[in-house]
Length: 311
Length: 303
Image (cartoon, rainbow over all chains, first blue to last red; front, side, top):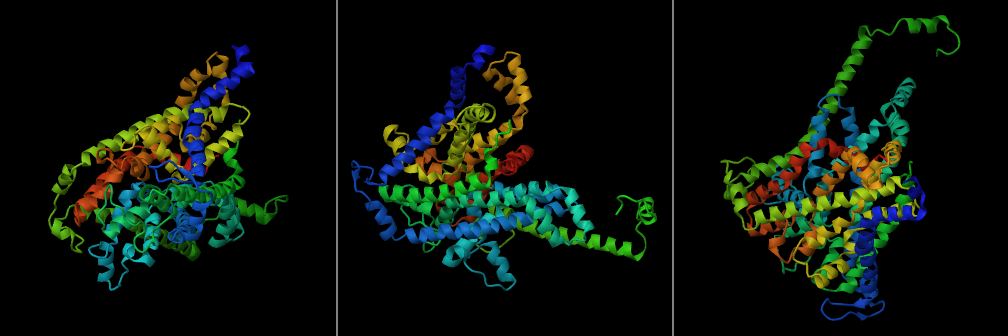
């Protein structure tokens, strides 16, 4: 036994054996489609006739002519900046609040965490109802106390902020991560700061912040990656709020109202599966891929801990 | 203050612990109580904001059709039969079954394929391990929309599986990057002595994995199973790509959105359906709270 274990060829084979599910999956469901996406980005292909080579035509179309590319990119970047920033600030505040609580911690934590579990489609449908201008409870209550409320998901300027509110409702995961990080800050450091007569802000700035910076960084980067993929909530909110009947075969313009909720992933779907413009859809996919990879590289550099080998 | 010399003041300070008395102590206590009240009031206010959406959704779900169209907040009569109507809606039970199949099989496949891969990445030393880990993380970060078009073409044109959930379930038997990453982070925390002693006892690698590692990694496995179940249950994009063509293959998450249009403006039915889609996830959470929170923490803190 000892002899066979030390045999390098055998060991190599064993590693391959254990890794084989992933090696197959990685090649078939990642590498192949990625290469095929690059290939199709240079092809004209309507998914019926054979693809024909068209050079850079699709790329030029997307960057120079496609009317919705600008709005979609703008919306995606808007969401990346506003949503991620607010989520990190709010998640950290909530984590701080819960760690300051003396009683009922479990109850509060569950209340803050629960909305995160609501399936995105269900949460979105619920929010479109809550904020609907006709019979929604939010505008009803605001109206009773004399505030004239916007029409939220039906108003191009308020649709994205409404999506941000929806995502802040589901802050539970970030709150839990920040709570764990805050509880990990060594107690002695706070005691030392107390002896120095530090106020609450000074304690946060010089004790808490330095020790949670890696977690904040992690939250920002994963938040950016997630928001780059932002799809379901924006699509469902747009569809339900528009009141357009949907179902297979119904082609609707995504991004209601006025393209204000159109994101790049929605444009990929719309190009590839509604307009059957495979080439343009693949170009958009690659744009998304490039941005996601750039962010991932940043993550690798800032958090080399992800790759730590501890044995 | 008390380092080298045991001078009189220092000795005194040690000898008589500060006993709070007098107006100063009272002020300190009042400050503490005020602080308690302030923190808890904020917490209660925020908690209300988090819980009220559920309350309003529930209240609307038991309203009559006509009342649901008004701005009323409280149901004038309680229509529990709305829930029965939802269940009797065409397709609802089928979507429920499909969701369970997608989430159940998807979770099973993911767990079975992630365990050996995560184990190899955590405990074997081999050339290219770092690269493999890098690739796993890259896959994890990849937006699903990037590769969806060629993938769809393969499943639809080569395997004729569009209109079903199989194109979503089958790949899960070949490792899911997120689960592999998470489980590997967990396995790193298992001391290698356990594994080595099993090897000394003559256990093969595979038996070591099954009899030593898997039982010790139960919390990690529970976490990835939960995450994957929730992921499948919540998935909208996948079923939209592959199952949309056949309503018989829709899942709850996908079908829910069409519910609103089927019931026109009936928010009460839509809200009842919405709660029914949320319910299983929330019930599972209450039974597996610890594993879940541990898993969430694992994503951010460990490693």
